[in-house]
Image (cartoon, rainbow, N blue to C red; front, side, top):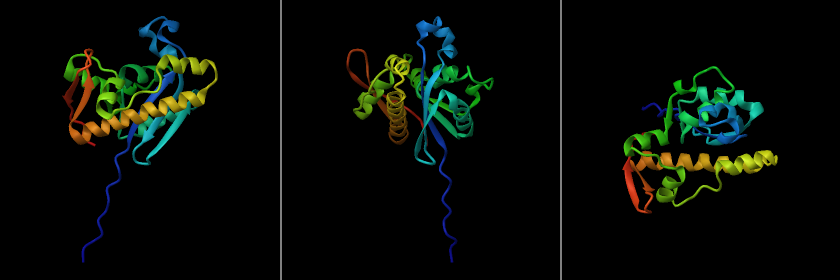
Amino acid sequence: MNAPAVSAKPKNILYFDLETQKSADEVGGWDKIREMRMSLGVTYNSARQEYKIYTEKEVDNLLNDLQRADLVVGFNNLRFDYEVLHYYTVFDLRQLPTLDLLVDLQAKLQHRLSLDAVATATLGVEKTAEGLQAIQWFRQGKLMDIAEYCCYDVKITRLVHEFGANHKQLFYKNRFGNTLTVSVDWGI
């Protein structure tokens, strides 16, 4: 008689994005990213298959969840999102197991791509707004608008990552409007 198969615990991939309270211009430039402060952060936990929204008051919960993840996946999270969070912690978040899709794609292509350029060509979906709009919403107290936008960005990031992991390539539009491919090696 065979023992029942034991299913492996799903890998805890945490997809992550955040929005800020202030723009780079308002804080004195891109070298002061942490001064932009988080307005709202969103994660998607692949093991629990659920989204979670964090306000600035809940930033410690976000930091704990990031540290518990087997892998944090984001788009420009090493340079931007983690740097914003460094305002709230002395822990160097760059030590976390992280896949920054932008950094990986930039290393392969030798130029930066927007999440929108990849998502539109690969999945046929577009972002619903941009970061400056989210700052305006923050000033207007429209946290639900920020949450919806940020959740959608996290979903796009997850879908791009999953597509790349499954198909070993992504598509993107270059500045001339041509659709090109890039190979990726993102096992899940």
